[in-house]
Image 1 (cartoon, rainbow, N blue to C red):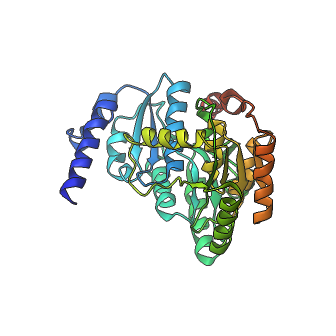
Image 2 (image 1 turned 60 degrees about the vertical axis):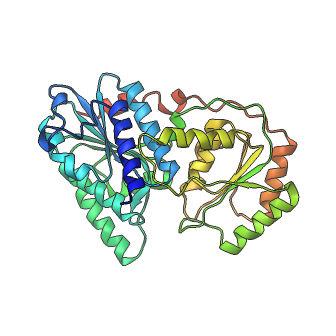
Image 3 (image 1 turned 180 degrees about the vertical axis):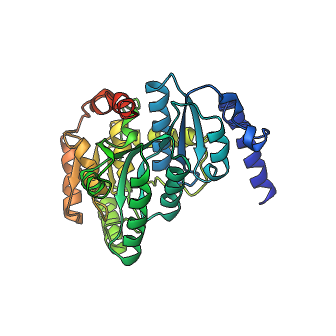
Length: 359
């Protein structure tokens, strides 16, 4: 670690201690770290990321916001994906009978992202006497021998927990969970980021593009280049952005980094994206959006929750001509954004569904 990195880590630690004084007691010995929570009912929010994907950080922020609003009678303890291993024992030591563990959702359930999946299984095993809530997720186990072996292991661990509540953020995941985790309570809920809401901007200009270049992309590299060139030729230099920003994001920096991106998106006339959270960020900022599918069902079915918004257009079989047509329609119609359904539309009864499933 360089001296500069050490300074950054120290600064983040100090900010965390100020922002979350009750849950960030680095000087407290291991097993006594959470002693201030003895006798208090708590929600442990975990699988919190530290990587550079702002979509996952938005899920973490929305999940915490949901808990603070809807479970105000509970203390909240956030534990990072790597820290849960070393703090599980100390957390169990101060357990209250009503304590719950919430695992943030996202697209990391399955064999595509092993660290997240294996950590989830550790949490389920380590907190076997707790109510565990898996917040809205997308599942993907490949049909390879490895993927099927991982599914078999997941089924054994998930199904053995007596109080695991699971949420699917798309119908394919919901049906998969019903089939493979048949003795669990399973709910269908949208991505937690739809719990957030940002103020809309009145001045908008230009086309913004956010396209994947990883294993989840539906477009081939040459197709992405062709599309980008065509948009530039038609609408001038398109602004490109990404939800993976190339630097570590912490609990301290996540909200400021998200606000930077949301402010940027809020100034776009139209956004073209194949990222689920690119689409959802447009929804919460009131930005017209052309949605391109990803390699699996995640974006296609995520769009289901937003399909009635006139400023959202899905291009299910993406080609350059179809995307350009969709951009033109949104601009031509001056796609004045109509208010998205309120958070109550999506989440009104969710606390009761969670509490009601405790027994």
